[in-house]
Length: 225
Image (cartoon, rainbow, N blue to C red):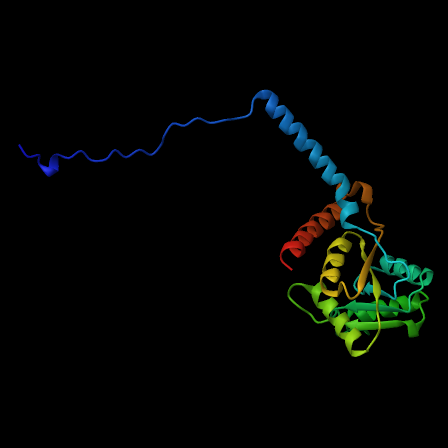
């Protein structure tokens, strides 16, 4: 007797299934949470020193200063230039984005240079290099502008020290090294902030904002740029 095709059993539809699942025991959870907490404290304690790195090159030819940094940082940059044996000081910076039509200087390179002159750095030692306004990768654009000036001026430069603001240092150092090394050795000096305690940056909103934003920016520069 032939079976009617309509008598065939339809396949069973199952939306869930039973399976063995491994999970942590009470002791395992205690060990995991203890390790995680200790790791978080370690990262928090060492994050600022990692970002605000200072690793200068002795007897560097040029001191390169981010022109947009605050006056307190420019004061420290002026002191560094006077202490060192630098041939020149170069300021970099984009166009002023607030008060452009009222300002005497139209970009942060010129503002930084004028401030450093007021702080006692000899006028003939300072060179201001305006950098183009870009939507992203401003530091890259600054380094490219610096490299273009070096090429066009036929300057012989073996090493530079970059001077920038505290937690911004690690990211900038990375980008400068990517573009200039190994032809030009790059050191870095980070300014010490007066507005919050670097050893307890998590106790101030300014410190938290800076550290978190610079951490994200550094990771971006590390893997994207």
